[in-house]
Image (cartoon, rainbow, N blue to C red; front, side, top):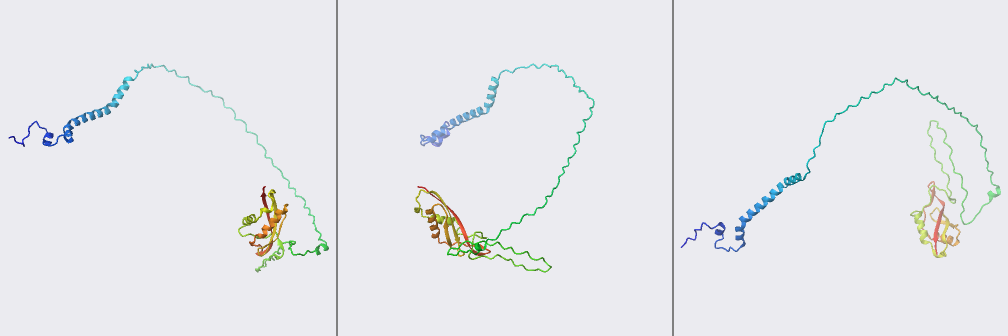
Length: 280
């Protein structure tokens, strides 16, 4: 009986490892073919490496083989002729040109002629006749009076070493007079644009025919000292437009901020141009 632990010398290591095992399993084939595949891979890899390393030399060799033969150029020495030296002609010294003539400075003489003073004629305006001065008009509607000239206080006396206190004298402000020029004008709450928006919003266009086109008018009214408005008038060419404009102004109940002179509220005449377009 043969000893099972003694192996034949012709057996390889793979046969010994896979003895009494399923050799049809893929691992046995891989191990038996591994040396051959390794040798083949080494040869292919070495060949590719050598080809990549030698490709520049092969390219240069092929390029040199395709180059045209070099052309020989004969370079014979040529005798160089020297140019004749240029001799500059020396011209005799010429006298310098004469200096330009000096222009005499012109002195402009300006004569100051002082005109003789002429006394301006004094224009005197004769006073109106007594019959005109006594004419007065009374009624329920307040009318614009005659503006009194602004009062100018006299200059203070010259100082004599002692300090004297001077009080500023302000012109008197009338409670009934309607002013058109003031220090602080009357203002509507929100500004004049807010007032125009209220007028355009409350205006009833049905009062017009609708084919008037562009209609203009100027509305005047008096802003009283308490902020209310009175004496509303419209002086446009279209009577229907004027009537509706007056009605619209009366319908606005918001009170104005009154105009002021010297910090006192006064009656102020306000003018408002109004333009609307009616197209049929």
